[in-house]
Image 1 (cartoon, rainbow, N blue to C red):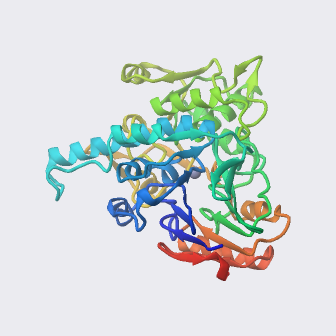
Image 2 (image 1 turned 45 degrees about the vertical axis):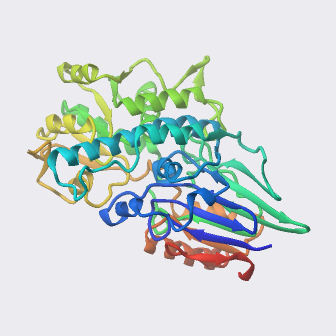
Length: 465
Ligand SMILES: [Zn+2]
């Protein structure tokens, strides 16, 4: 049986995940992610992929993050007419994230037209809300563990990988006569022993495994998350300051809220109001609470039938009026707002007010990509440009590395180490080149197993490996 695996994104970079599996009869695409970050990468979203979207039979989606799902509307618009399979919780989150991504594309195009800086007249969005709606129509939910028959001897199932709500690795069996090829695609691998999400399951036995390597050359801070969060916040309250936590809306905002609540219940932090000021985080929290029994979540997230993600001193701010009302409050408080890298959104209004005052704290809880205000802050900027104005940096700021939703290098090795036996090859993807190479070397030394680090557009005949 002829089987080819080609990499059309998520190779040499952490975004744009798109892996195409072709057998004689079938073409399966694993993830359809958007390229994000540097302009050179973003431009790739505008290039036609080097496979014909209409030639793909089935699409399997590991999780809802835009770097895995955000290309779906464009793919559907360009001719993909098959179904898109994912877990039930991923379907709910993807609706939220894809409609938001479409809105951003539309607003960017509108802004470019107003300012006249696009080479294209008129500037067009990469896709519209209608395109996103069409992609969502093609999505179908499949629960964890249930085999999905894909025809011609191909079947697949989703298994929990503990990264965000609904996140999965994908196990795929391709058979022809007595021949069978088994593959596992990791998606993004979560952490061990952290609150909110459950530990990743051990990967099932397979011939070929594709593993992410976002933190392939790094180690997270493994001190207890409660200690990491409580120390800087306590000091801020002692000097009468306000705490601003810029945060990703899906997963991170809920994790931070959960830990803060536990700290307050235990008396380790004063009982102050926590304000979640992000419509997306409010919606994501609601979706998390609808899926409290999902395999990807901790077992004890409900208390007397109520979601622990909606505790009484957490105030949700959905409308602009509710958000503005936050400015009128006095006293110590914690504000959690998006975006996590200070690139856009309501967090910028809070930044303008809180950054010039020494007693306040800006707590960065996620990865800060090159070129973002978050990164500038970490690199010691004396002022940040926000809404066209220079805002002096006088508040304290701190970056916490321990709250990542991705396994670090040791955790990836631990996850791979739970395989019954090493696969014939492990493809190391979804990382900056240094991170992927570093992880591949460790796997070859420590597991050991033979690795390949694919580059963008590489195509492998699996029978030859
Ligand atoms: Zn992810």
